[in-house]
Length: 212
Image 1 (tube, helix red, strand yellow):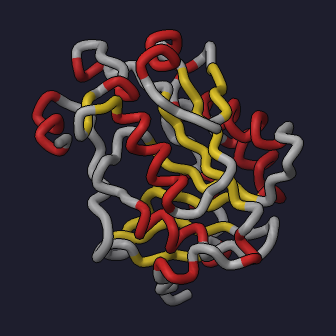
Image 2 (cartoon, rainbow, N blue to C red; image 1 turned 30 degrees about the horizontal axis):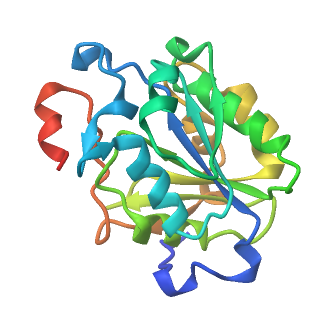
Image 3 (cartoon, rainbow, N blue to C red; image 1 turned 180 degrees about the vertical axis):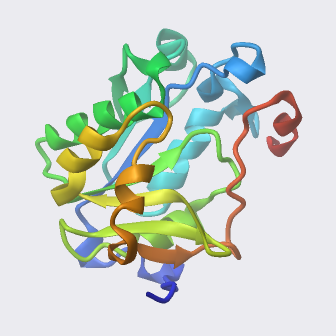
């Protein structure tokens, strides 16, 4: 399957109106001396605010944010108006547990959600342009799509609601939806984003230079 090319002008299509943002922001920053990633400072504010804003700017009217490490401090310091805050008590188990918690929260949202646009809090180089492209790949509740960076799959990831049960069952440790998507090959639409985003994580002290 060729890499799709979705432009920002497509972000507000009617067919993607039911795509909600799902921000995974529960990590404790073990390799950062135990500093929760959601509370790292980026452009003068907590990093979680920036990431939630990316999903909003990409056209997601519904945004659920999964918190874990220092959840109370995040609630106190971060300005996340309109977001549904989901606390994951099992955050230390890894990203998989946060993905499961987030999908369960979206499934219970009374507004009705057809797909989740999943973003990680520790990738500040991914902005609204890339997120909007992946969001625009939505076609149905069976949609699967992921950002592509020079042929390598990354975030954001689009998970149609028809896949949530399978994703949740497969999510383990820090692998999230990786194994589920890998098993489905060409069913996952790749969306080229290498010209619009930098997918590197903020994992170590050296990576803090990626923050502004």
